[in-house]
Image 1 (cartoon, rainbow, N blue to C red):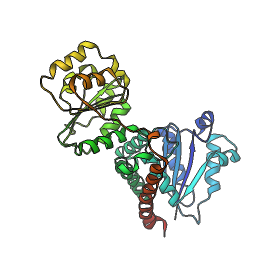
Image 2: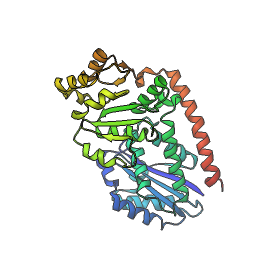
Image 3: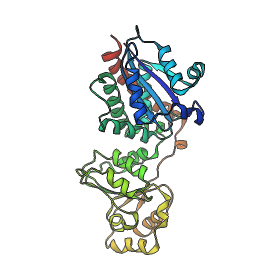
Length: 338
């Protein structure tokens, strides 16, 4: 048995050519059903995102034909077979496992939005897009999601993670040690707050207030699980009380600068006694400066990608390779060494 992956991204083909490969939900489901009829195909799953299309196949290599699959893509896209061969990257067995784990964890240099890839795959699980017929691929993707969710919080891997949000919370954890019983206020756009909510999902003893700065506050509210009673969403204009009570404030958007002076004064008026606060303010906003100057909030500085040395990145890569070796061996032993 062999695990295969065929991939097309906007990094390897022009945007116009990529449009010919793109799949909506119905076309994706139709393609999976069609590919399952090919000789040797035991399982198939298509991971389709705005800039990426990847076909994962678990096949009997004695009867599966690569040519049949590539000719099918040529027919679907109305492109010559030689162009399909040039535009389609392929991997097999252990290389597929490593690629998927690195992709979901955000460790590939060309990954443009690591979290949205992770979140979209997680949503597929929640919507039961993996059936019982996907035993091998279901376990593979579940393992990749688990790897991504844990690796993002590993201090040793931060030099390789391009996403600033996990790095913020790893840094805060180093400064504060425990998030238990702490109150967070996080200000940012809808995508940023959705990522924060997902990252902090397991911290049920912390109180988390999400204050969106864009027009998608209603969309964010729809994403909140009513069982997660420790998480709330409020309009940023109505956040003064929550800001005054917060132990940790994270500002991810300069749009918070639209807060009026009277709103900032209201924040200070609510605070009647000194309170120890930590603030992460990536944009040096008026709110951040006010809290530091008038309330004594301690600013936490977050390292950027450029702040990590070559040696630190190499050490992190070595640590990542060790984790990937263990994860890959587990999948290979169960499914690929038959």
